Length: 339
Image (cartoon, rainbow, N blue to C red; front, side, top):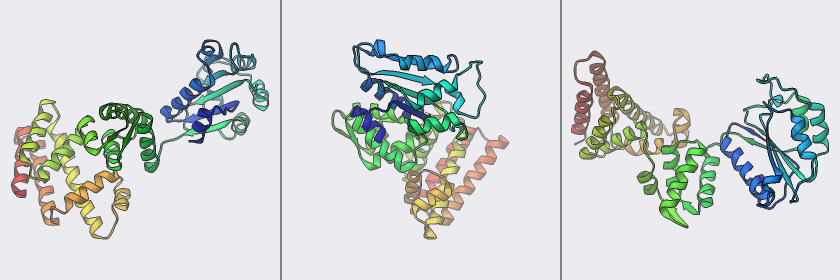
């Protein structure tokens, strides 16, 4: 991001507007500003933060217009500028927006003033919003698309003094999701594991990232597709010890086989894996694995397995068998069919 590059090079704007729903990105820029605008000696005197739900904006402006003490620059952070949105203010705080308009047109050269608006949208019709966007360096912290997420993960790994290979990026996104805070925490853990300038591989991610129920069921499905009966039942018994509901496990198994069947159908018709992922609205890594598993089955075999799952589902709902036993018997039937 060019905004980060400029901050690292100590090329600061007088006014910043950081808005959007990705709080991790906003906080990252805020931390970089604090580290680069302020010196260790001046931080105590030249840093201020204001919550505009409790404080009139003119108090922040007065602070911004005051010369820094024991430093060249001061940093003024302004949170919750609700007047930039179409929403109504929660607190009865009167803001002198005329005073703010005047400051935005002629900001103090010795102050870096940052407006943090963690809202999805701003009211572009308002005069104050237009003026702020015109005079500020603006960063919209919106959700990253998949290529941007992958690029961010690679950059973040480097930030933590490691590298990450492409297959590891895919599996990390699949296992940890797209929440930047979670991804960053997992990358810290992975980087510490591989050491300075180490390489984070697919195996590293699989061994260190904790699995959700869905991912455990995914691993379970993969193990019995690969005829690994011991691993299949190890995962299943672990899930039972964790008091996971058998009917929920069955539902996730059904979803896995439906996906394999759908991917087999789509790729058989000439669709690329990327196109299939878009049509099915699932992570491309899941489609990639499903396509690999699809080669192990004929359409008839997949239909038979889906029918067996439907029968098991009926047994669970009618109470004909103990639920955990019913799913265990289903796994045995599928494994028998694969042997």
